[in-house]
Amino acid sequence: MGEIKEPEMMNGESENENKKEWFSVFDKFSVEKRKSEEAFDKISKDYGSENRFFHNIKHVETLLKFFNQRKDSIRDYDSMRLAAWFHDAVYDTEAANNEEQSAIYARRMLKELGIPEDVVVKVEKLILATFKHENADNDNDCSIFLDGDLSILGGDDAVYDAYAKSIWQEYSRIASREYYKQRRKQVLENFLKRERIYFTNEMFKKFEDKARKNIEREIKSLE
Image (cartoon, rainbow, N blue to C red; front, side, top):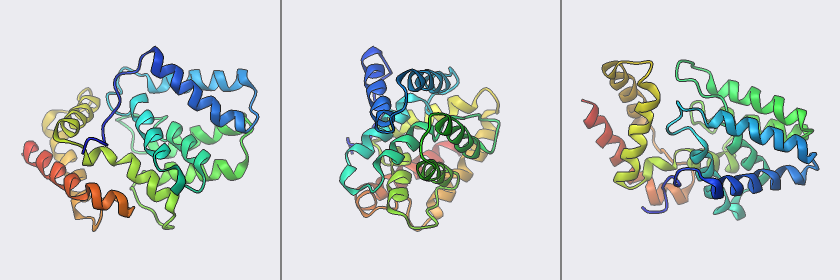
C-alpha cells in the first residue's frame, strides 16, 4: 500500500516544484507571468492557513502526483491539474458549501487569467463533484479525480491514522470531541454503505478492501 501517502512537509524545494507545475499549466494558455505569479502567491497563502492540517498544499501535491501517474488515461489533463489546485481553495470547517465556494473561487481567478470557458466549466464540474463524491455523468476524468481525492483512505495504517488525526485537528477548534465523533462516524458509515468507494477499476481492485478496513477501524476508535 506504499503508493498512497502524503508527501513530506512543504519546503523550499517542493515550493519550487509546485511553482513549476503551476506555471507549466498557465504557460500553455499564454497567461502573463506576472499574473500567474500573483495567482500562485494567493492560492499558496490560502492553502498555507495554520488551520489546515490535511486540506493543505500537501494534499494538492498528492493529487497532482496521482494524476501524473495516470496521465495516459486522462482526457483533459490540464483541467484536472487546475481542479487539483482549486478544489480545496476555500476550506472552512464551519461552512457546508466549501466545494461551491471553491468552484466560485476557481471561476473568478481563472477568468481573470484568461482561461477558456470550456476549461473553466470542466474545472468547476470536477470541484463540485467532490461535494458528495458522486460521478453523475460517469465521466472517466471525474472518476480519476474523485479516486485521487479519496486515495488516502486506502493508505497503510500509519498513513491513514495520520490522516484521521489531521481531520480531527481541523475541527477541534470548533467542535467538542463527542460531537465530532458523532458526525465523523456518520460520514464514514456513509462511505461503507456505498457499493464502491473507488470508481476506477484500478483503484477498486488495489485499495477498496483496505479503504473499508481503515474506515471500519476508525469507526471503532470513535466508539
